[in-house]
Image (cartoon, rainbow, N blue to C red; front, side):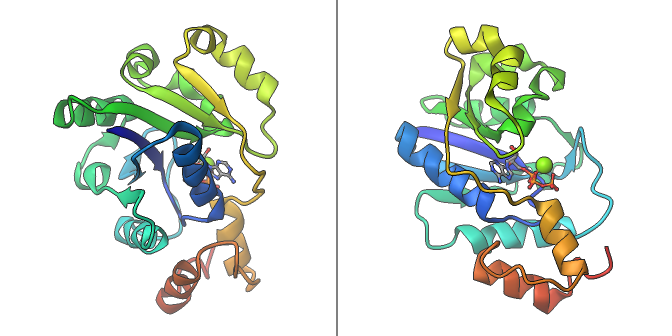
Length: 199
Ligand code: ATP
Ligand code: MG
């Protein structure tokens, strides 16, 4: 069993997240990508947008129909601040036989050394680092040189998707279309619940 955890605020989930997860499955022969919406992320304040249950439901809508994707409530249901190292430790105890990875985009990779216990995190789980427009690869290699040579970090080139959740929230507040930038079910959820209109 090869499992990858993909953490994020998913405020909201969009095609960049989905393409990234799908590419990880095919590049690394994963059995599953587990989307892990953060409850209270350590390095980011969720000042605006959707509540935790909305972010979770949008992930559930987005992954439905893909048997290789699942979504977890683990970080949402813990009332503490979320740290990836603690989440990975939990899943390692739950699934001692599984090979664990975690997936991030290039922007998150550049911050990883500031996360809690990055050394322990990278010993427990291989990092799959996806390319992302605007975050050049050479900066990743400089940041994670040592872990790249130890094969604890694998760079994954994916089709460039210049979409972010920030962009989606802005577009909704400006009454611009987000069709095709998020799955259709997510688009209608945002519309029905009136999310992001007052950003
Ligand atoms: P925000 O603008 O609110 O920060 P975001 O689009 O960056 O949202 P996050 O929830 O912060 O989304 O990201 C979750 C993970 O997905 C991170 O590791 C991030 O690097 C990655 N990711 C997000 N969008 C893309 C994209 N377009 N291409 C590659 N990776 C992405
Ligand atoms: Mg982000």
